[in-house]
Structure formats: C-alpha cells, structure tokens
Image (tube, rainbow, N blue to C red; front, side, top):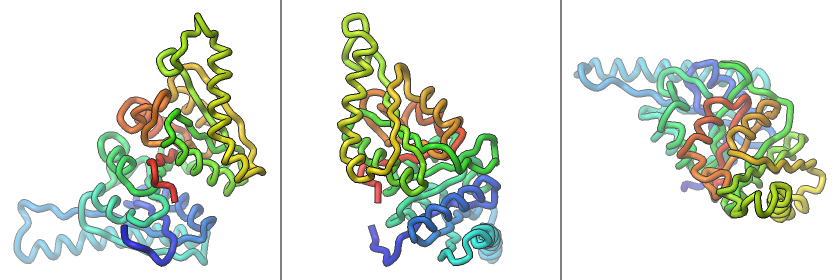
Length: 294
C-alpha cells in the first residue's frame, strides 16, 4: 500500500443523484477528520467497432464526460465546505478495479446506492461484494429513506456485533463515528438456537439473552474506557440479524457491520443479510473488514 502524506476519504461519483449524496457524505467525514476528499469517476471506452483515430476521440469524449461529473460534484461539496481540500481523478477502467486501486491508502471509500454509467447496478450483484469485500479500508454505501433521497443526518449509529474477534474493527469504527457525530451508539447482538449453543427449552431465552449481553459488555469494555462520554445502548434480539438491523436502521444515521463473523453475522458479504442491508437499509451502511479500520 503506497504511503500518503495526507489523510484521504474517497468518494466514487458518476453524475447520478445518489453519487452526489455520497460525495457530500464523504465530504462531511473528511471535514471532521481533517482529511482530503478525493473524488473518483471510472469510465470505460468501447472496444469492438472503434478503431484508428476514432479511438482517441471516443476516449477523450468519455474522459470529458467524467471530468464534467467530477467538477459538478466538487462544486456541490465546496459550496458547503469552501476550505475543504478536494482532489479529482477520472480513471479509465472497470469500476471495481478502479475503486480498489484508488482506495489504497484511503481511510474510507464512499459510494452511492444507485448509479449511472460505470456505477450502474453497484449494489445488485458481485460489484458491491467485490468492493466491500476487498477494499483495504471501510466501505460506506450511502442510502436514504427513499431512492435518490439524501441520507439521514440524525439518529444513532447502529453496529452489528458478531462473536468473532474480527468484529472488534466494526465496533471500533462505530464508536469513532458515534463520538464524532455526538450521537448514541446502539450495539446489536442477535442469537438463534443454532448460534447460541443452548436450547431455550433447557436454558431459557432470558438466560441466553443475559449470557449474550455479558459477552457484548466484555467486548465493549475497552471502548467504554476509551470513550467514557459515549452513550451506548445494547440490544439483544432473538432471530436473524438482517431484520433487527433493518428495523433499527430505519431510525439511524449509519449502520456498521463487519465483513465476516461467527454466529449472527456469519457470511455477512456472501448471503441474505448483506444483500438486505445494502438494498433495503434506510440509511448509509458501512462494511468494515478485519484490519481495514484506520
């Protein structure tokens, strides 16, 4: 990973309203962290059927469109944060490879939930999983209550806490974001008969929930000590995590999950839970891979 001489928050843009919201969301994060906002737009040039001098003209046309989109996004951002340092980069290539390459050394990658051009269908298949599952930093997908609506800026930060030590990175990211936003942190642990290792008929659901709460409090202890001013609520729920996180996310400004775990959050990027959050969440969703937190 190349060394940078400054902190960077990366936003993928493409001229769509959704990516515009992502750029603004990323700018707010960059401003809070004293970081540079880097706006990146990927573009691809059609191959077959284009030859000779036409190739250069077509390539320049696509680059020009990308540069225009970047300039518009920069203008929107600077209207709200005039002194924020902004970098722009129009890069030829596939969206996944461009974002992964450009994310090297960044503190976060921020993407819209709906897109045009190179970012079309970002959350509907393997592209989202590839970016969130392989980027060397946390990836945030900005969503609102309705399609193309600005994301919420009030409410708590919600984090899904699994049973793996890997989930500590997601917890740390969520703690940092809640503290920076001066808002409440809601820590969610879900359990089922399969994940708890106990049968409610033998142990009782209240006892299982109490045991899960004790485990969560153990994981929380270092963060409570680090951020004593942080207001933390713990939610222990029976059932699968997607439903609980979506319900709590309806009133949140950010939901944070790890990229993998055990118990209630196993296979977060590979199954129905991740798909449900990325497609249906009513607020931005941050995916934090182990070791990716700055």
